[in-house]
Image 1: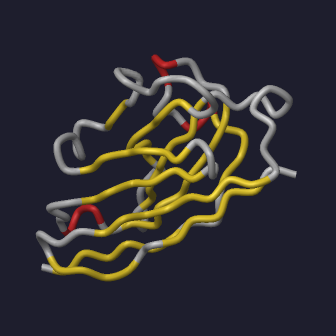
Image 2: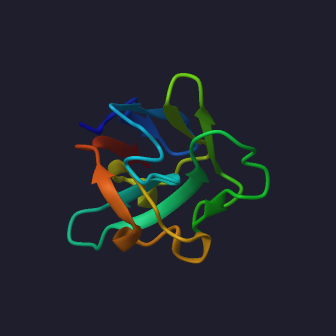
Image 3: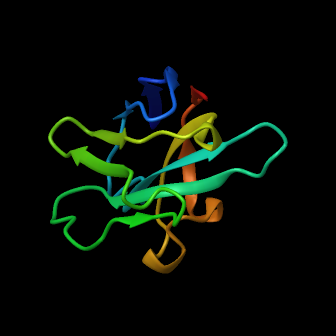
Length: 132
């Protein structure tokens, strides 16, 4: 059974940094039809939005990561393939980054890799709060 568990959330001040982790377990990339993983976030009263996406499984990720415009240059997505862990390094945090952050895994095409519909497996979320 595929499980995703996020960690690393917390409270920071504007301009601070946090690093989120997402541990994937029970994964067989071919059987479970997983080609990518992603971070999404949802603030109170807002839709869940894609933040960043990265290929999973064996292979090079160079040129295949994707970021929302709102986080480009501040957030970095990465992965540890051997240990099935995905990360989100968040720097220069702003109050508008405050949200529940979720990791997800699935088989979206690259063109829609930040859309919810392509992801079948989801974690429970970790809260990020940025104060001014």
